[in-house]
Amino acid sequence: MVFGTEKEKIDLVLEKTSFTASEKIAGKVLLFLPKIKKARALKVIFRGIEREYSKQFDDPTANVSTVHYFELELDKEKEYSGNYSYDFELIAPKIANQKERFETQMENTLQQYDKTAFGGIFRAASIIGKAYTPLKPVPKIEWYLEAKLDVPGGIDISTEIQIQIS
Image 1 (tube, one colour):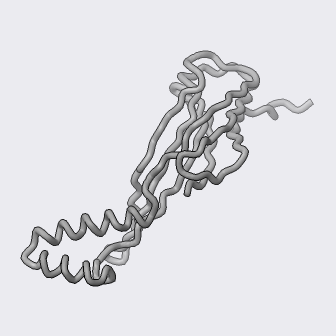
Image 2: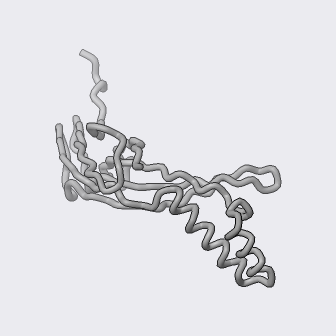
Image 3: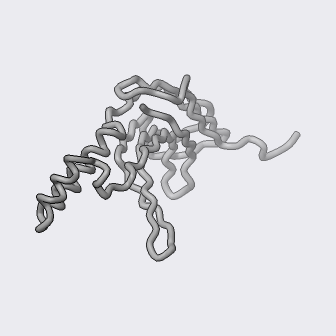
């Protein structure tokens, strides 16, 4: 007999990992705890992030911003022990696609130039040819689902998977 081989484990199970906006995302959280574990809650966290890369003084940096965050509590504070299975459903958010986000970024840039002495000239040039707008590429949104057992004063038990939303 080997001792200490049973580990705490949490799994996130989805039928697929690619979704369209407003589509239902259904899945299961499977929790295996060989010993009693007091926790504040069991949650599914759904988030979307953008990573925008820039380079200043030959030093590349990444600016990460959260564009979507939602927590779904599957179970409350209690002592967990044994095997658990929780079903959940979420809806894929309808966040503007990259073309719409690019056009919004362009309009915001034009509004900034309108406040300058050259604003009218720049707006006229950009209307004639959108290629003249000094815009950065619109970052793609990365989508993640995380299942987490929130353990107070200890190490949370969690797992995360990346999904696609188009």
